[in-house]
Length: 101
Image: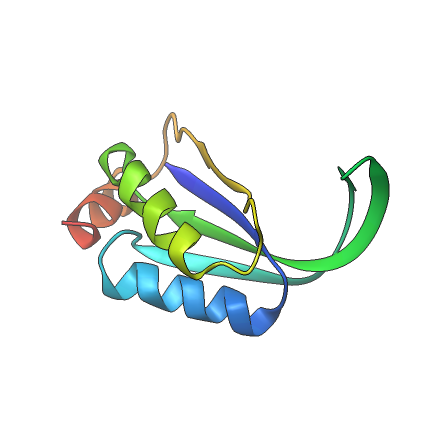
């Protein structure tokens, strides 16, 4: 599974990524800095710079990841979504599975 989380800043993204890796909830994370986001919040269009975390994990870790991220994230309602990996390098996919045990 791919994990996608938006964060307020690089410090928050590094903190969340580190915790998830240390707890073996994700195998690794890529952090994309300085992303321009446009979104509706409280009936208003907002513009904000954000940081994106892309992580690799397994389906059975989803609920625990959501719980952990919500404890430490600065947003009232953080974006935490998952995308299925349908295929790929078998050795890499096995590494994800082994790294999240």
